[in-house]
Length: 308
Image 1 (tube, helix red, strand yellow):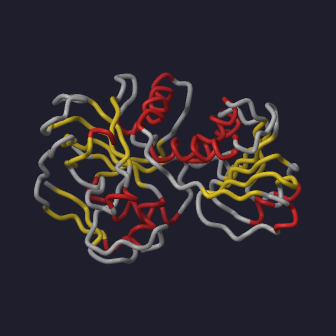
Image 2 (cartoon, rainbow, N blue to C red):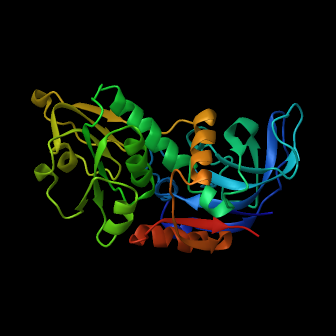
């Protein structure tokens, strides 16, 4: 089969398309014929070695979020049958690229996957697992602050994958959402239901004060300036400490796989209760160019690699 591996740590040029042995399904596993794999900033960071928990030694395969069909089933696996449509998240923080999703076939633990409803296509489905679970789990940290219903939350990067889901899920939770959008993307964020949309150029210290910030970019101190004293800031990457005298609680949201949650979120996207968007698709063999496009920025939606 064809797969994409990072032969060294570095920029997109380290990604090589190569022939790899086709995997076999072990106990509790299935082999997934990949139809779509989402390209995340986390994939780009993995190739440069700039990821939490320390860099991974090459060679390895990037790729967290996959969607496809079950090609074979391993011993003691009863959750899926051959031909089932599935979507899931390879917990890359555990696999460290062995496996990763940039391949034609992946041997995946059955509990990494959920069934893909017929109403949702492979490409859209591949944008859901990492982004939507990160948003949901980060908002659960906000809920620990016991904010009253109707309290205001600022979401940075609301036009991005994580921020877009965070905006919608915060609205479902009964919060008033102030969403920061990229230039030219205000209409999309308004369409997600945000009560107020502010530009990326706005001084966030003039926004609020809000009870909590979901810092999906993250922008760090600039976003923290919007939160009230004794509020909470949840960031998706480590950020500098906030002045402790204000009593602001900082939380770091690092993804963890939650199969029950994933099934619910995928179901909501399939039913139209949550929205996602795809900017562009590219063949798996153009993974290096895909990383260049992600690094260049300006994409309105996710970039998804397709197979077959």
